[in-house]
Length: 450
Image 1 (cartoon, helix red, strand yellow):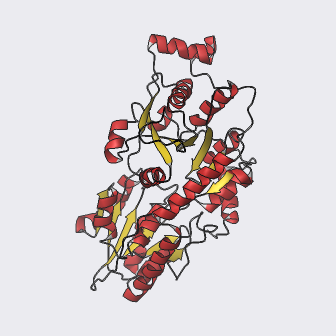
Image 2 (cartoon, one colour):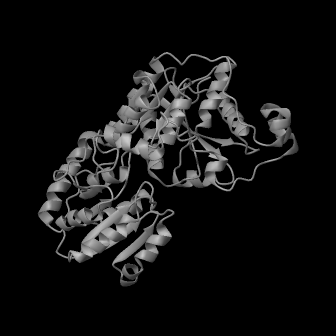
Image 3 (cartoon, one colour):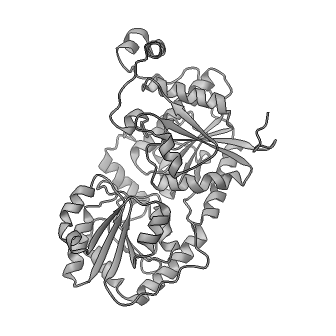
């Protein structure tokens, strides 16, 4: 029977996503993609993981969506996660399942196929360049009907390192809302207002470069103000390192902001956005800033090469990753209003040509339809074994052990969201490369000197 929102041609999409992280780029992507696809004869259903750290109610308060199902694992085990996903898939009966960093989805689909039950096609939405995610793609290549990457390097690596067939690898970038008419900035002389938006960590975002950049900027005699929107593991050390600037009012930490507050209190306040990342698959923050007429000073992060969007001196100013002195020099150039205006105009043109929400939705729509048209992956005779989760599994086997846990009401008490619902399983063993070798190869493929 069709629901009120379905027609005979409507295809149901089940997006399986964590609810532990209410704010972030992936959540912003889902916010515009789900309603966009609903306007294109799809029925997008949001499947949110639930648990001690995965609060579905809190997530939906920030990101309301009417077609939502809760995926609950009462035992906390890997087997429990797979069974919860199977139950959800049987209930929803989607045509396509899109995993949003919930890799147990692939095991659930594999088990349904091995049992010769009705099973949808399954898609990995890959929002990372990290080797662990490519490891998941490699390990589940016999199950994946498609992978959609948000960055061209991600797609190239999926073929070269994860071994996915090129016909199953698709590209669909992020998109942002573009104000109409475009934002025109006019500011009087004064301190250069520098903005940073994003997670505060060192491994990907290189947040610890920020104090060094500001030190170099001070040495150049540039008068500036600096505001940070975001949070993360480097936040406390950054605040300590920038304590004098915070006390003087030159530096402010705004915390994690929702999109409306981000526009009002950061982008519309700033003269320039600073990005220091080692790698990115967008990032959405650059496209958001450019869409609002804000010029960008960015590292030549891994992921910017094949994407081919950032042009030094044309639509942004670039510096090598980790080169804090050059970063400060590029920020110093932003004190010239004419430089800022020219960069902002070209940045806005870039976003309108490649990174609007409408273009992004169109790309995802085309990719999903292409995956539905392709033959489904071949069915294996046996499911991939699940590692025992404790003594019950060792004594009784994984299936019976899980049944006994449910009867006895036993549950693992996880200590963090990724233990409760892992966002990645993958192995780093991609052609026997260690992590540093992998990043070197990735940078070389990206045609991007770090």
